[in-house]
Amino acid sequence: MGGKTPTDDAADGIMEIMSLQESESAATNLARATVTALVRYGVKEVVVCPGSRSAPLVYALATAEDAGWLRTHICLDERSAGFYALGLSLSDEDRSAPVSIVMTSGTAVANVHPAVLEATHAGVPLLVLSADRPHELRGTGANQTTEQVGIFGAAPVFAFDVPAGYDPARMDALLRRAVCSACGMFSGVEGVSHLNLCFADPLVPQQQWRPGQKPEVVHISRRSLQATPEGGSLAESPVTGIDWDEDQTVIVAGAGAGPESRMIAALTGWPLLAEPSSLARGSLTHAGDATVTLRDYQQALGLREPSELARQVKQIIQLGRPTLSRPVSRLLAFEQARLVVLSPGGQWADQAGRAAAVLCPVDAAEAARQWSQRHSLSELSGRGEWLERWQVASRPDFPAVSPQHLAARLWAESKQADLNLMIGASSIIRYFDRAADAILVDSDGPLQVFSNRGLAGIDGTLATARGVRRGTNRPTRVVLGDLTFLHDAMSLLPSLGVEDVLALPGLQVIVLNDGGGSIFAGLEHAAAPQALFDRFFRTEQHLDFAAFAQSVGAKYREFSLAEACESADFAPAEGLEIINVALK
Image (cartoon, rainbow, N blue to C red; front, side):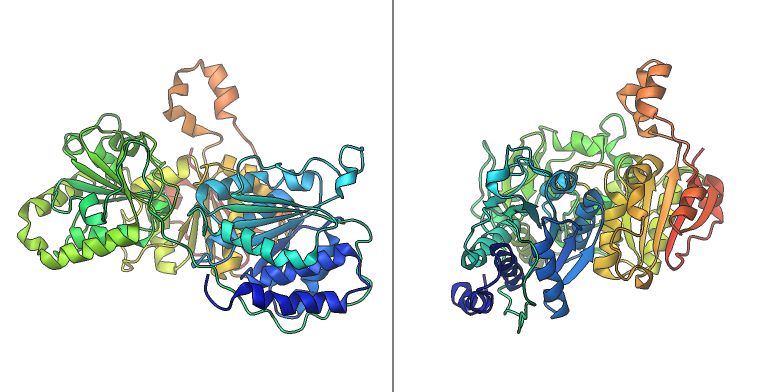
């Protein structure tokens, strides 16, 4: 934690609140102390869902926003608001503080649960501030009163129940603990902190709050941790944890792998198998001028059975959470290949329980740099031959009219137009996984890609995209399936992020419409009796997309798959646009 000592800094602000507001209610004083502490520990964005029990926080937040302390976003529906907050947090590159979300008591809190789970498993910092009735009203049948303590189960990294009589002077220390926990300072695991704030009547302040000068922000610094799984060994250094001279090595970059995976691949010349949401996908060359990022790496691994090339892998370097394809999961389970996991903190992916070492990616990248300074890749003929074999095996080979070709086109055009790209789960992101960068463009940098891969669910995709668009203030393209669209269609209503909607950059929603859950046709469930499969798995939908677009004030276009692959104009328009592409 950098900056001034928070305990001393907090004293003046808390004392100012208390001396000025001696005549105020306990709820108002607690809310003002809470908002002051939020700002002190770097919270800049607060998503607010309307409600009565949360009113003390709302009054304090409105005044703080008028004073320039923070920015609020008003969302009517708590489920969508949770994913909107998730999108705001995803778009914050430094992740120095969590985005906060405020809601009233009762079912309002339960509706945030899906976003809480996604943030937990994706390692995205969020701070949930749920308002509650006083403790004495629990179990009495009082209106909008349920057991909110522990409502999110084991998901939060930190949780605290704040009673109605809680001393406002203690809120600074409590918020510091909540923010540090959400940012992973203690455990190395970023996630959700939950404060359940009980407010007793009266809920309306008696006098106007004059918050004065903005508190000096205390920045939270994230520790870099090393950890080891049971049965593995924590290497003394990344140099001993990774065999840098092993030519037959591949790098697997899963969701959220980040820039270190690209750096290590560029320095070593090892093939890079990068998922679309890894932030590592893109044309990338090493010193020998050969492209290390593979395109259709699933094809190279073998779609149904391991390829001969895959069987020759002797070392795997894994970053992020690889969850998209069975060929990659199969590779990570290979007993003949040594698996080294690079993780920035205390949580890492190791589904097969095979990690021989768990190392810090920053340290590994530095070790790769030192190794590259001692070796010329042009001198390592075996490594060049290994990379070339993977390049040949991963050349895209799919029809010109296909969902994969359309994904390749949308990826390339998103790069050229400098758009945010949000990709839906299920079949859609798998199209991109095989086709991203199949069409080469001038931009070699990684595309800014977002996807809810924490639990890989279809819920909240549109709300997350709207949060990303708001947080980045950049035009955003969403590509998703029809069922994913239906699951979150109401997040396109103006009631989500209601402020300044017309002033934001465009949001383009492209629906790849196959009339239901076609992904199940590629799984073992396809062998089920046809009637059972159609009713319980395929679940056909017949939404009138044109009518829906009109109802939410969106522009609307529709294309066949052939038109979308060959001639359709996907240049994003201003405002909200829905494009329906019929895959069948």
